[in-house]
Image 1 (cartoon, rainbow, N blue to C red):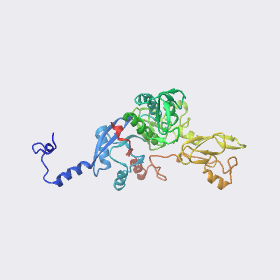
Image 2 (image 1 turned 45 degrees about the vertical axis):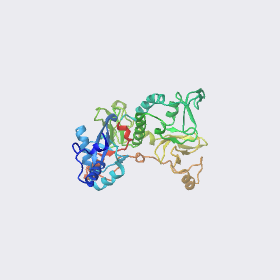
Image 3 (image 1 turned 90 degrees about the vertical axis):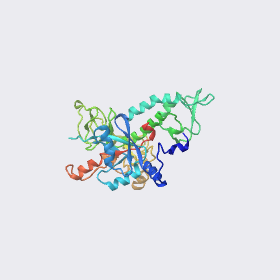
Image 4 (image 1 turned 30 degrees about the horizontal axis):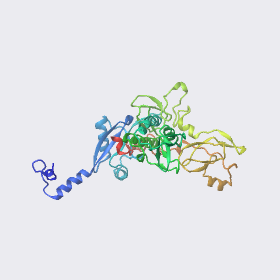
Length: 390
């Protein structure tokens, strides 16, 4: 077809004026595509026109799933229902073309992709196939891992690994392409070649980010879930499994699990992060220090390294295992040193962990304000690379 055929009046009526043509372009550009992801990472696509509301998002979900009684996640932030002005600002900052909306089931019990561990195992299983699609260096060269002369892959500065050593390296670097020379992290899209594998890596990063929140969980069936009441015993609406929301184990009364807030009390994940045993300090046996702590800055759990009382977290923050103040503040406030006592042992609580849903303090569970707060978290949206919908 020639260019002139595009506006053949027999098939495509020619616009009366240029303004009509411009109007058509504006209408087309005012529509954004949104990807919806729910149980097990299953996806579908919807379109939102300029001026869309939360009700428009819910309608797309209800038409596809038969209900809109879900919570949604965007960029790890909460969409607050009932406030149109706030939503307008929120969607401008967070909901873009090809954003992905995570659909989470509600868990309101009291007195829901695959889980992160399984996702990582899947990536390792797929990694060898991905490596086989990648070119190696033309000549045999010494692998930085096994030190053998073999076919290798080079990345970043001069990191050289064979395909047999690469999976162990990738796993030990927490699934990041960290250069063996300069320690910079290489973007996956600048190394891996398959769109599906890249999408899986990106989704792992974002799922892990959401899993940092104490009120978020992914059931073993793949359903996302957010806990409104923070009680341990919950039932997955998808697979009907009774579970401890916090450690994701099957609920078993014979193991003396207790339906309390934040923990089932049986080696439960978040509880183990803030509890500790006092052990003797290596360089001052008359002094005791907790054997594990959560970093006050990033909440990553770390263990006493048999050295001094100061601990440097992978995030870069250095703090005292006893008073939990920064190393600098501990030294200044207590005139302390690595093997000298400071303040009393500070106690960490569940409040240090981030949540997708902001805690509402001093609000009765029976009040309208509390019920409104619960409704606020029915919709969340989280951004994923557009390739994940393909």
